[in-house]
Length: 269
Image (cartoon, rainbow, N blue to C red; front, side, top):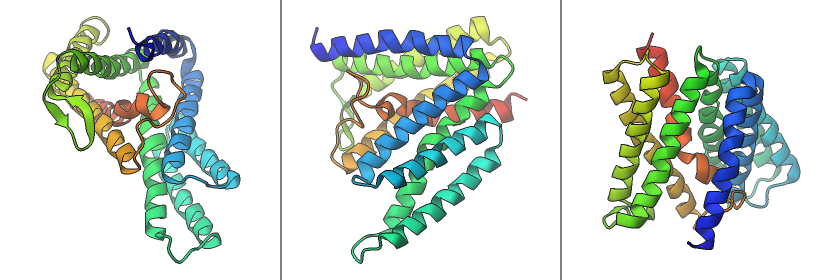
């Protein structure tokens, strides 16, 4: 067993029990704090990738705005979170004016900042809304189990049996066999959750939801790989030994959480 694999297992052995404790015992406030911390670390990784060398003041302002998005979700006010995106645009525009350079693409800077806020705190904030549902603990656990089981299975099945590359120009290590194994693992884990903890979810809708979550989680993984490849970086950070950075761990969850929220909100009335 390689040292990298040992670090991966040890990190999971520490992080998973802590996550379970926060979900079960932390209440809405404790869970929102965890989501806020995760979003803050993720946004710092994002800006280290695409805006290296930024000032401490600029990063501080962006962190405050990131937490404002999470705070809006905690108050169940999606409209306020969209208002924060307007503030992000205005603050970025002011910073661009203060540091204007003839050769700098202002459109690239502005779009990069907005994309970062939509991609990380806005998408991740839907987890807080899910946790706030009736039976929200079960739904949150369902989502995390499906996404993380699929990610883990895709990794190990791809390592053991993978031959056909899934998207070699984006992520050379991912295989069709791994993706299929990850999707199957997510379906199995999700079906078990539905059987014992989510009886209100009919089997046909459960199957549709699990397919959506499984596919979108893998799309999220590929999307983050594409972002990293655009700046020629392998991992978004080194905070989680054996896993990389925070974004490397939550990339699938960022795409899956909004899918679950809107699916249940509009199809499971």
